[in-house]
Length: 203
Image 1 (cartoon, one colour):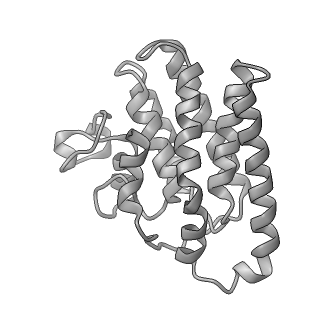
Image 2: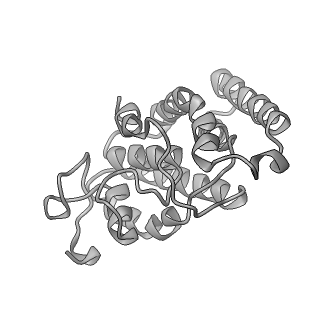
């Protein structure tokens, strides 16, 4: 099936003919196995993108397809990337609710965690470690990312409304900017336990 013929929808799908979420669409473009966790994309980024896809309205979801190219390039060996995405979520909350105490604590916790990981795993050490291991280290913060994303939903406007669509699209754009600034790697590798990521974001 041509990628142009695929419609974006909520949830997961058995094959492209039944529809596709944003990350399943990326997997079609990539040419690998059809599914929500294509190997070209860091699993935490894929989980966040899947959450954005599922919380965007039917009217707003087609516009997310324009991010698919960047998502194909959103691999990374940065073990602090998941924490960086947490900080992006916290910044989104603070932009809409300045002074939010929980978001400020979450942002500070993210900065501390990233500094700690940078000290424990400097770039010289990371170069000698398998990509899957570095990704797995970062995924220890997945629960923090899930909580941070739900905090965004709480301030993003009514469900299925245009305001929420705009906030979530901007969140995904900001997240992709962070990935672009990280130490990226396109070496394909499947990180451990990635089958639970999309379900975690949907909880």
